[in-house]
Length: 77
Image 1 (cartoon, rainbow, N blue to C red):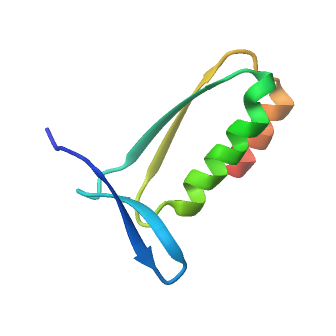
Image 2: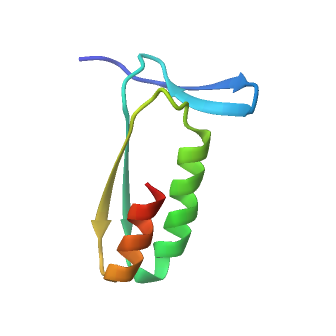
């Protein structure tokens, strides 16, 4: 079992999130249609600040998101 922690490193373009051991970062979101757009903003921020060498694994617990909104979320990834 690997103990994974978070670090914020200052790079040329600001702070980036990384993991101590270089492990993937797992994120779980739960959302319905009403919270889907704030979810997009949260996900975009996570992607922006993540070190590009680190894999981001996203899971979404769907509590009633419409298909057109899911399509927008997929495009973001």
